[in-house]
Image (cartoon, rainbow, N blue to C red; front, side, top):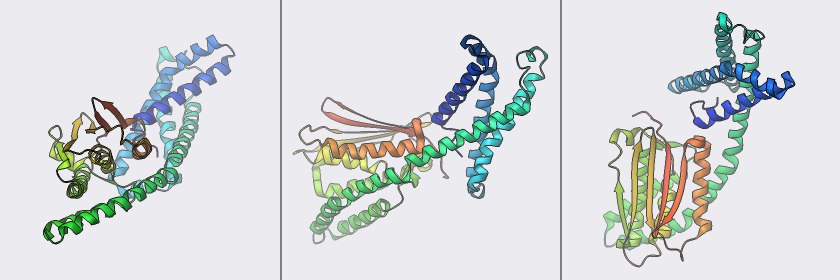
Length: 339
């Protein structure tokens, strides 16, 4: 079932249904002026039926999430639901409209069964479209690029981290042990399925482990400032975020903002909530001579693809370069998990 709570899905469905209705009206009337007038008259039913069908499918999807057995229903049944719900909703709305005396003239040619059948066909068509769209975005291309990115991360990061640990074994054995534990946690996540979700709190904790490893290598050159004043502890524990969404952005900040510097520099991470959205800003110094467009954009483009797959148009990743600083702005919906 498509995520009918998603703004992108709602927008595409509304545009598609209205374009189909307008095309049918123009063909049926044979005159563009009469066709437009016919479409305007019918739009009252079209918009109500489309919106209420989307609301019903959205509510049903949310209900299914509470019951794992329902969410795992066979694919053919999910497709049938996507056709049955619009048919039922549209049939009820048309029945109510043609039962109102002063509206009978406008909908004289419309019957409940004709409207329900049309809605069922459109529901099945759009379900198939969104299913194909998801297949086009997902696993093969997106995950292949992610695996390529992770393969690039692992060798140089592992080599640098192990060298840092070796330097600590004799002088600070306890710190070396903690660093190896952090490294094990990080690589456990790196090897996980990129479609997995985690909590914002866990993702931040993973990033802190990553930064503590880099701190050993870079020393005082790496200064970190976390700002989480605009987000509550409960939101941090419940907000869902794709695994390894934040860590590659921090790796970019360290690689392009801290490593080229000869003196201490600060990487700022602001995490906040604005209404129903989570906002994360990462700011680091910009070194034009050390900036690698290819490597940097590879991570950023990969994250954009993952956001498009999971959130459609409801998530954005933007970058700006201003006054010697490189800033990444990440916004995505606040989806609650189990506390």
